[in-house]
Image (cartoon, rainbow, N blue to C red; front, side, top):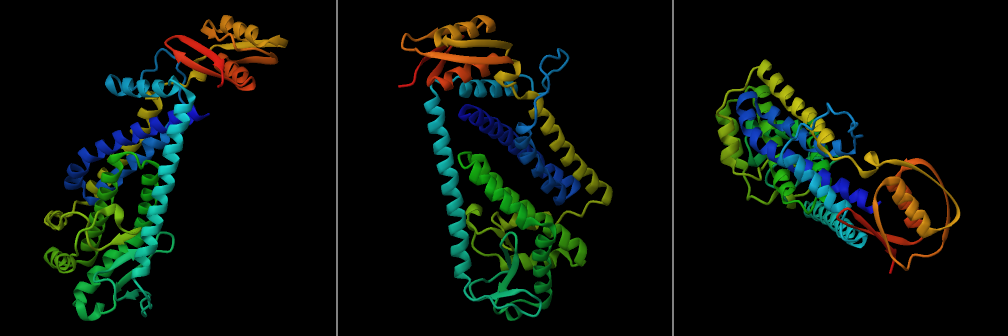
Length: 381
């Protein structure tokens, strides 16, 4: 079971990493052509391709079925999976999974601790008549939380900023709430905890947050009718020191974790029409669907899906003889250690030979190791 889980983790990592690279290439051109919202939708490709790993693979017995990822991509995926499945020892796979699980738990604890520590620094949070929380510890509006996200503004919000600036800032934060950006960012933070070992995911998390801000900027400008120059002035007025995106608490912030210049430059472009925006979203969704299909068809079949079906009927038979029977029926090469002893009763009908072998090996406390096309079977030490 450890090898199967490791195989899935490797496939999901390769699939999601490829998706992040595709988003990296397409997000800026698509943003210029179809708007910031379309570029934001592109991120749907990442979870779609990773979750596609769990979909049932198509039949590989059909000679007309060809993987849509030819060449090095499909070969790299196959080689990586074979490395996991035919590793030097099951103990290495178990150790690797233990390290992965420990890292995921530690990353989750760090996220939770940082968020709680940040919320504590906000101090007392009285609520105004508009339902917006006030804090002396912030100088710019922000949204904190995931399931019960709330807007927090400075205690002197009405004094610090002009009425027009306050209106634009609150519209931006309410756009985050309306679009469910806190839930999406919370899911992305959980995603990073799972794939903590992948450097690309740290970069992707920061860019996802940035694309959220750009999409909200475009939405506020189009709704409010405020001049782009006024909105840019508001951005400059409240810009705070830049922190790394993954160290921030879960939520959405008026300040950007990327150069403010990029957000202001985007305000110079006119908003695309409805047709262009709809086309951009359609392209993003089509890419996500294509990614699902590509991963589903490119993923190598599991050993059991292509293994020959055999029937074993043995009553109180020597384990070595049962293993020889499996080898004969499957056409595989087994090398059985002299230490393998004992008797076993097995009644298995029309199951993959790999499953029959695993059943015998587990029941007798044995281990297997692959060496080329030879399966070595020995007593667990």
